[in-house]
Amino acid sequence: MLLPNQIEEIIGANLDCNFIEVKGDDGTHFEATIVSSLFKGESIIKQHQMVYQALGDMMKQEIHALSIKTITPDQWEKSNKSITEIKND
Image 1 (tube, rainbow, N blue to C red):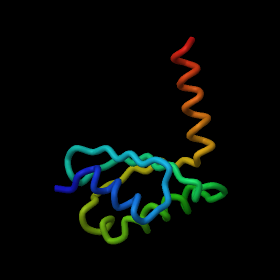
Image 2: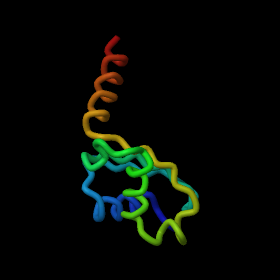
Image 3: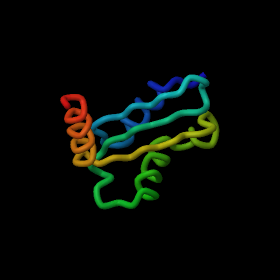
C-alpha cells in the first residue's frame, strides 16, 4: 500500500518545493497541496503537468486518483495571512 509520505518524498526529490502535503488513507486516492516557485507564471495545467512528471510512472500504476492544489509561495503567504487574520478576529 502506498503511503502519503512516500508520495511527498518522491515529489520533493523531483520538484523544487517549499511545502508538500499529501493526504489519503486508502493507498490509491490522494490529495496533494504543493507550494513551489516553479509554478509562478505557469498555467494550472502546466503546474499539474510538473507534478505528474515528478511522479513519473506512479500515475499509471500505484496512484489511482490524485487531487492536486498547486500554489506559488506568494499565494501561500497571502492565504496564511488571511487565515491568521480570521483567527485573530
